[in-house]
Length: 424
Image 1: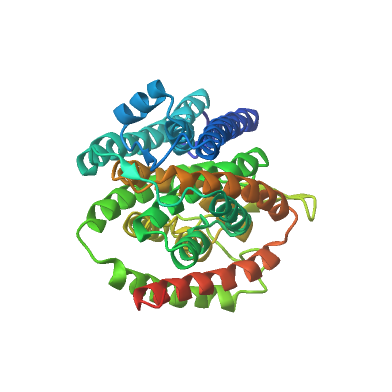
Image 2: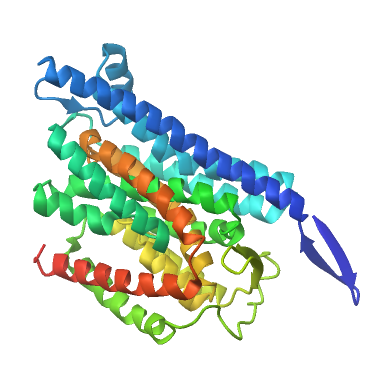
């Protein structure tokens, strides 16, 4: 990492731009590769599953929710075990992205982010193989609904959720959970498991494009992922002890209050008068992004890092407690507290929500809450919608994106309050 001396002080300049670009392409490639591989395996398993169902060779299916059970199912030729492998590949993509980021930051000779990213990876692995195994169960879980109309309805609904999620930095669960629970009467735990999958699918599908297009601030995302992963583990643990009703109400009220600053700044294209926090330069957080609409590179500062870090812990806590991506809260932290441009806020939120969800995904999987017949169409639909949404975002102004985001925040708040008061 380069540095220069000013008045006898050594000021780090950060890595070379060409090396940073190489890092971005590596991380984007990992996300894209993980998505394509998981989609191929999921499609193979789904096709095999429905072929056996139509032939009458598969009655009262169950699915494995431990790794030994998955291996055993593969050896028996169980189609749902194949689908679960595809889902696990998708769930593992954010984890692999974190692991590869360590190598990428090492190439940049950025020791600070090698340490930060290593900490995030350690937290993820502890959640998956430690907490997840502790809270898991051994017996296979029953499939909720295995009809073809159900599969396609969930697929198309999830495509819409993925499109909106990619635009505004959400995971799509705000749409998927009510559809599954209200329309198809899916148990709430299974709907939450599908929501976790949708969060990771949105993040992986959209972030691959955003990172490649230099819209995401990788260092802001990696630094704040320490807070979100710790919060997600705490939330997943506490979720086994608490009734979520009060949490839905509290989250809904917090979102309504948090939306007020956004409403006051609806016409803002770029944050004005923002000063870098004293840690911002040390952590190399300020950045630029290419604005296709104006065909210029837009530079921005990063403020109130401590507030942002604290809010990200709360966002992770909410994610683990309620099984949502809490992308709304992440965008609010990035935009309102840290004062990043709206495009950078939503794209960096998308980058982060997959890792936050992965921190609790292992717990939900090993509790038998991720039904592959529900999660498979969710994953496929969300990935398709997120890809289209990522293309649309690059052509929008920050002002228009903010006008899209505010109604979504209000919708999420209304959804949380309705669930808290038992109306959904």
